[in-house]
Length: 308
Image (tube, rainbow, N blue to C red; front, side):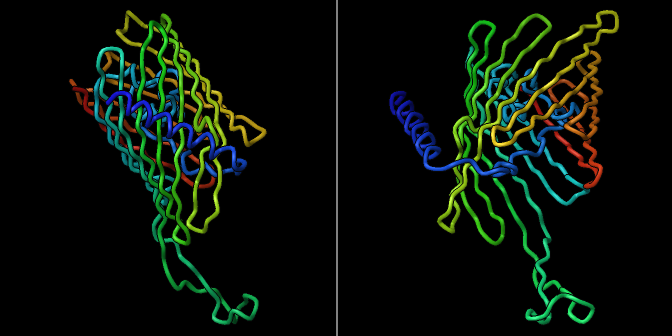
C-alpha cells in the first residue's frame, strides 16, 4: 500500500512537471489564490511563512503543519466591503514527527450584472444607455492535501492542491504543488515557501490553458519573551517574489500575546494596514482580522478553531 501511494505521488509530480514544460506562465493567472486566509494571519499583515500557528498558515508554508497542535479551523471573511466572500476550513493531524492536513477554501463573488445596449449597433449615449439583463456569480474552489515532517530543528512540508474555477462565462480546473521549509532556533524562526514550484496548469473548457508561475516567499520571525508580564511579542517580516513579475512585496506583522490567552495584532500587507485580536479559552480559539484598502474598502476575517 505504501509503495502504491508513493507511486501515485510520483506520477502526480511528473504530470505537473511535464505540463509546466508545455507552456509559459501567464501574468496574474494565480491571483485567485491571493486572498489572505485566517484571522490571525490577516491581523499580522498576511505574514506566516516563519511562525504560523494555525492550520491556515499551511497555505503560506506547508512546513508549518508540523509546528501545530492537532486542530480544526474554520474561517469566514467579507472582503472589499462585502463584495468578495471567502470561506475556509482545515484540519491538521500530528503523529510523532509527521503531520498531515486537509484544507479547502472557496472565493466567490455574487450578483455580477451583465449589461447590454438597447441598440447594439449604436454607440452608448443618452438615448442608448446600457441596462442589466442578467446577474451571474463566480466561484474558485481550492483543495489542499498536506504532509510535513520534522527532522531536528528543520521542518519540511508539501502541499498537493487541486482547484476548480467557475468564471460564469467559462470554467476550468487544474492543480499544483507547494513546498516549504522552516528552521526553528531559540526565539527565532526562519521559513521559506515556494507556491506552485513548477508551473501549475489551468485547463479551460475552451481547450486553452494557462500556467501559474512560482512564487517564492521568505520569512523571519524573532520572539521576545516578556517574563515580567507573562507575555510574548512576536514580529515577522516576509519577502514575496512572484517570478512572473519584476517587483517584490513586503508583509510585516506584530503580535502581543498575554498569557497565551489574549492576543493583539497589527501589520502591513503591501500598502494596506491590518489589525486584529484573538482570544484562547482552553482548547477554543477565536480570531478577528481586518485589512484596509484605500480604494476597495475594508476586509473582515472571522475565524475559530479547536485543538484536541
